[in-house]
Image (tube, rainbow, N blue to C red):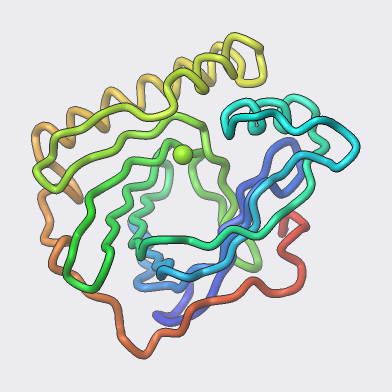
Length: 210
Ligand SMILES: [Mg+2]
């Protein structure tokens, strides 16, 4: 278990390769729930098209080609909002709450992702394309549904995985509409410890940790 304030690495990994790693600060680590903080200005790595092939013109096409070919390189990306992540072991999603400034909630976000696996440096998961954007008033919309369907259509995510993700999204939407779980809790009023720094990636971010 980690202590509040520890910096860990959340490694997204696909077929044995790190896809998108980001440093995060541990807020709380309990058996049934892990809370992580990523402040505005945190620099993470995201996959990019190798220099020897043509870069697809859209973010969606770029991600799909990189997933299909497995040849991505990395580029820096700066996180533009401050977010608290709520992760429960076994869940196929994380709930994010984001703020533009302390106390100014932008909204919630349900990120469909593989259940977390604890590693020696943090956790491993993988973004599963489909997302749910939730406004502070709990109205919601699906995001990147077209990208997700394309990934399933091309067999990059197999049918079983596609089905599991859609099922998880349906359950999450029910929680949003019924205001259950984290959506019933006073997270919008939560603020981070002001002494926490902006976390940085440490060496080894590019190798999936054991
Ligand atoms: Mg996502």
